[in-house]
Image 1 (tube, helix red, strand yellow):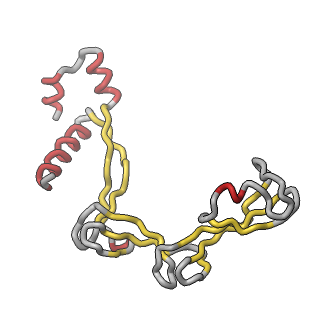
Image 2 (cartoon, helix red, strand yellow):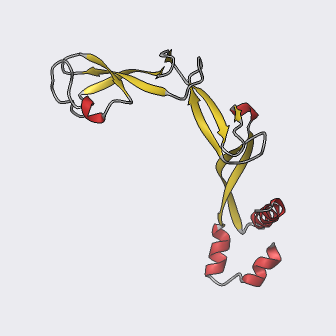
Image 3 (spheres, helix red, strand yellow):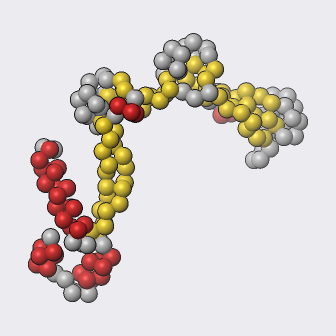
Length: 165
């Protein structure tokens, strides 16, 4: 959509908010590439040591019945977590607790407390941090309750709406 058409639409919406016809609410925060200004941006979680995307989340799980702690990787199939590796009892709801979490890089093998969060522009291949991103607030608009009541009761018509705006 051409920039001037979007600006024109936003001006009309702002007039309707000022005239108390519409309510405006923050809906989202759009990130744009600082290089090409495209909104086609992906978030990436990287190893802070080698910048690989091959990050695995691990959990240290304690079986409450027998006290055995096990490392459960996010790459393991869920079915491998159905039974305790020590006592072979089936884990029941509430029969275990997570006592620790960390990440591990599959490329360099290092354990990571928190991955590096970056952004990647799919349009121009630019890699950037949140601090460098262009941020744009996205709003949702809904009919103001007072205006809705006036329309439903017939107190306000199209001509009156146009006069307000």
